[in-house]
Length: 373
Image (cartoon, rainbow, N blue to C red; front, side, top):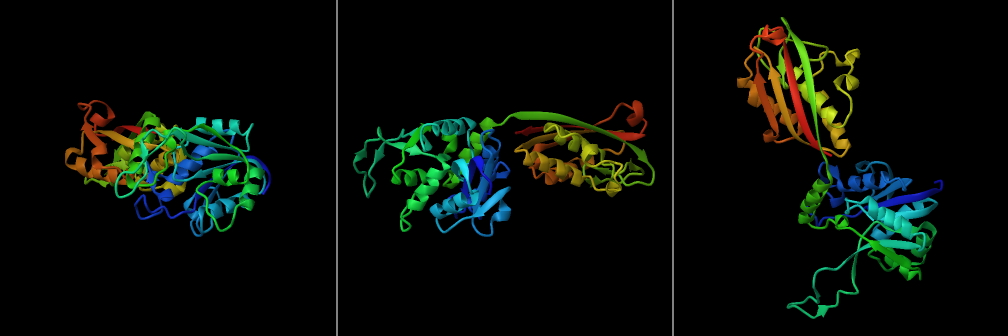
C-alpha cells in the first residue's frame, strides 16, 4: 500500500457475545446502522483522517463497508494484521468497533498530542468508589491515581509497529498503549468522552441509543403529487388496490399517495424528488409498483444515518371513500418503511366539489415526514 498521513484502524474481529444478540456486538444495529459502521463513518468523515481500514474475522468481509483486513486469534494479532495491511503511514488511530460514538473533538485532541509524544490515549477520571472484590467487600482502592482508558488510541505509525514487533508473542495485551509503554515509549493522555464508553452488555446498547439521540437533529419535509383518474386502470392508493370504476393514470402504477410520501422522505435528506431517481422517461419504470420507490427513498435516509420517525399522509378526493381503506393503507406504508403502525397517520378530505378533485377528475395527496439524523 502507498503511504498515507493518517490512517484509522478499526478492530472488529472479535466474538463480542456478552452484549447478547445473535451476531457479534460489532455488527448489532444502533439506530439502523451496525456499531462498526457508526465507528467507520465517524472516522472517515473526520477531515484529518485520510484512510480507514477495518479488521474483521475471516468470512466477515462482506459485513463492513470499505477496506478490510483479516484478523487473528487475539485482539493483538488482529491489530498487528491491520498494521501490516496499512503498509506505511505517519500516524495511526486504533479503535475498537464496540465504541460506536466517536466525538470529533477527541480525535483532534489525540492527533494534536502526537506532536509531542509517540502515543496518546483518551482517558476519563474514575468517579465511583473502587474496592477489592471477593465473597464480601474488600479494601477500598485509591482512585485518585487511576484513569479509565478509551479508544481510539493514536500513535506514531513506525513506533507502534516496532512496539508490536517487540511484544512477547506468548503474552496478551488489553490495548495498544500498553504495548507501546512496554517498548519504553511515553503515552500522553487527553480528555476522553463518556460517548466513547464501550458497549459490552445488553443495557449498554440502550444507553448508546439515548446518547446518539441527543446528537441527532430533527428534519421535516413535505411531498405532493397529483394523478388523473381514467377508465380502464386499476386504482392503487398507499400500496393498496382499491375497487373503483376508474384508476390513476401515470408512468408507474400512479400511486399518488406513495409518491407523495416518497417525495417527502427524499426531501428530508435533500435528495431531489421521485423523478430524479425514477425518471418517467425510463421505460423500466412503466407500470412499476410504487412501493419500491418508497423503499429506495427510505434506504437513502438510513445510509445517511437517519431514522424515519413519523409519516402524515392526506389523500384528497371525492371518490372513492378512503375511510374503509385507511387501516390497510397505514399497515402497508408501515411495512414498506419498517415502522410501527402508530408512526403512520392517514387522513382523507375533499375539496367540497371544487377544482379537479372535486369534479372527480383526479386524486391528490400531500405527505409530511419527520426524521432524525
